[in-house]
Length: 154
Image (cartoon, rainbow, N blue to C red; front, side, top):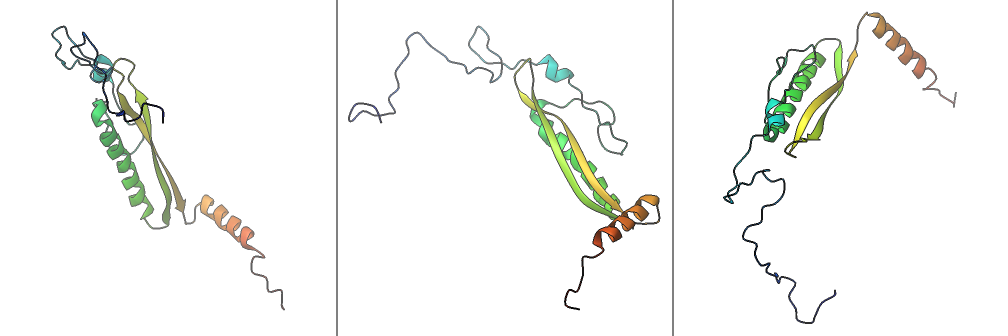
């Protein structure tokens, strides 16, 4: 450690002629009176979210979400897709193999606030039955397992 013996690291050097310091990009607002007042960001105000899937979930019509609420609302929306996938996976001859949610973040170019720009839910479903895909899957599994249980002693 560099410094004089017995000196404290907590010493603050006063700066003259500075009455108030406002951190950059906290609210993006300072007026001449020295009071901080919130300014409405037009980019955030006009940002719209809309779901593009064919499922019955929220945000079918475009809607606005405040940046500070974007995580909760987008994650809640994506969980609706997961809930639908679980319900589909509980049907006869179906199995939900996996479900993954990913969220996209962005930073507003006008006010500098970060927000959740959107989300994606990916699901993998396995189907059993008499459809052509299931028949191909069964024949593939049968071919892949041939010879796996060989008795070498006999």
